Length: 571
Ligand SMILES: [Zn+2]
Image (cartoon, rainbow, N blue to C red):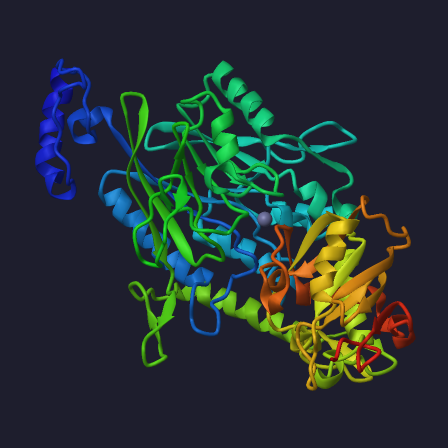
């Protein structure tokens, strides 16, 4: 005790400039505590370590056209933080909250190889398995697992045949002498929103139950001093997860207090910065207070490597303390009053070696955009004046692609999201990106027939005026009559199932419209995270040679009455 105190005093002298708060040794009841209340007081009995984290990389290995984020700059920043942490007597660990895959064509075309190579060179220690890791066949997941020089962790994914876990459940790291078990967990929604073809052989069990089991096993074997979870389950303030599977808050609340030190999360793609039980108005570069639930810290660093989360922990009295936390912007910019993009934080020079490697992948990815993925025997109609005034083969193709991607009964695709036609002949990914440049994702909602009627009463009866309207919906999988004057629809059939006001039906809408864009009613859908262009690309590539007759709108499927046009509401 004496020695510790003495060392504590020496340490105080050395680092007092770095610490803001002093300490008194009075307990709440006024008695004198014998336990140190700060890391400095604890001296050698206090261990400092730092957890760095990112999540939902979604193919962003390269900086965007404004020079924001990108793995080369991420590496420079992380290298610098690690050096600072070590100089300050700490050690660090780097975790990813999953969803490395899917989001930009240059990465998608290379099965996220550039992203995993980048993560290796940055030195990730572990990642959670995200739902988008299953956007490709399991053979691709296995390739990525081989490529990764760090474990992909998921305690709640089982191979149905063998009954064994498909991934390692956890890994124990010794960080500055503290044994930290990092457990991986994946959203149960994966079974619903991933391609059934790829995940049908896997079982996604309840992460809460699985974590309890793993923690018990870790305790029984006395393997760790602390348990962390790296999850891909989403953070929903106060546990209000809506139609999504329960997320990190529910997970933390389900554990015995003290069993789970912290959650490094992903999936909801938000900066988890709290003010009480609600999200704070986080401003890039500003303060961020992570969530604390049932004694468990919960953190998430938005998405795409826009930020690196830095949690400086202190461990003493057998307890974990969060000394400081920040989300550090990675060359993020904002527009100033003159409309120029200016850096929010300090400029980060991209790591030269990693940049060169990433550049090669970027070039290769861009070459891939020009590769022919299919052909069409006629024009796929997306001309503005046409697609906004009537059902077209391209509108139907896109709606069909989205509907089949997530196995929905029907699809609603706003015509304003169809930006160009595809001419007869060869089709490339570039053509697809010209048609769908916005990077909207696909949402899936499940409602009763009556609720769907209410929804379409608004969506299908939009008055297109003389020029046409981007709100005009392209529809697949539904037959109905639209009364433009009464602003009502009568649904005759959904996906060959007929129509029943009380039955449940599922449908897709672009994320833009689900959020109320184009005046559509706001939905609370499952966010599948599938990007529209990628869905269209895959759909075309799978078909190969498109016969436009296959996507020709069938006369009478969607009829408009009490309108100047038989193909839209024009009053
Ligand atoms: Zn996700």
